Length: 451
Image (cartoon, rainbow, N blue to C red; front, side, top):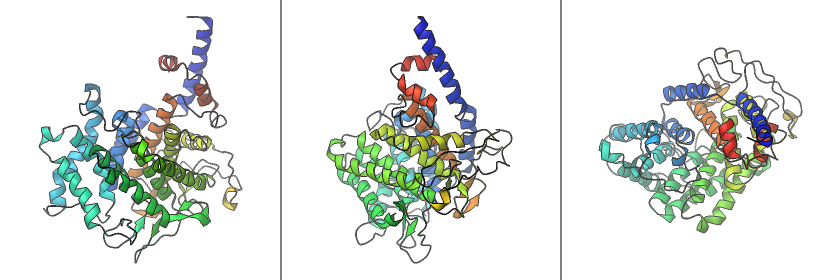
């Protein structure tokens, strides 16, 4: 090896060591995954877990992959184990849906739920199980289950006068969460069945929800809940904004990797701009500890790691999908904060202009961290601090969705680095080591050997 090559190897070795030190280890990722598996009990948690596992362990079968959609129907031997957990989720849901739904036939959700939208989050896993022929082994009708879920949404769920599907069953009500739950299922269903109308409906639902929930008076943050007789929430819930951005990213990726990419160019542009709207509103309010408040513009609420992780994942994904790198420095700071050892003092420079952001705030105390020695992981491996997923205005002790979010963040960051850390110029001040990786992206083989 030449002296020049040895020099580059030496630099890369130092880069990889330092970047690795600021990232979750495989052991920590495994513990986070274990807690997610133990904690997931509700429809949206099953769906979010399945999506996180695809991105993390079987990325070629995730819509975030560079590979075309639909994916291969024949699964490579090295991916069987990686997909097992995802297929187990789909299998359990489909096997028990008749009991869950009272043995009815025809249009029905994949699992009984007070939400009209949340069960659809499991739909991608069910569609993938059908696409890869899992029913031939276990005898389950995945195609029928997915079709019943689709028909339930389009035929049974109430709508606004202009066509927005309700997120709730008991009342006509729109939640920002819906954008992650339903449109990605519609988009994936449309692509796999070559039904352009259903794919278009995914975009339409996002557009309608944006009309109701976008708050231009609050810097383009999204309101959490609108309409309905009870439970309206005009606040700008951070996780709701992250749910919305992440759902748009999934639909954008599904379209971009599909045979309909050319005919849906304007929709892709809209989705890109709508994600950027949310990024602009949210990242203007990030705290100096790298986290958002539970309600982004309300400093009286607690810090929330869940929304921070999910929103960061969408920044990496938007960079990969559309070469938009604007908020990479802040996403990198959030990622490093969430991956930091206990006792770390996090202080970042923000460009926020709101009074709540004009002063430096310290990271929340890490009194619960011991065994892993992590600032934002408890000794059992739960992300902290987090919103209670069943009472979003309160702080919780653990959150299955938060576990999925940090896995999605880790997968997105990994993919961004593996792709050469494009746009690293934008992230230079956030992480000069990642910037260097991008600068020498012409030597990916050398990175693999060294790292």
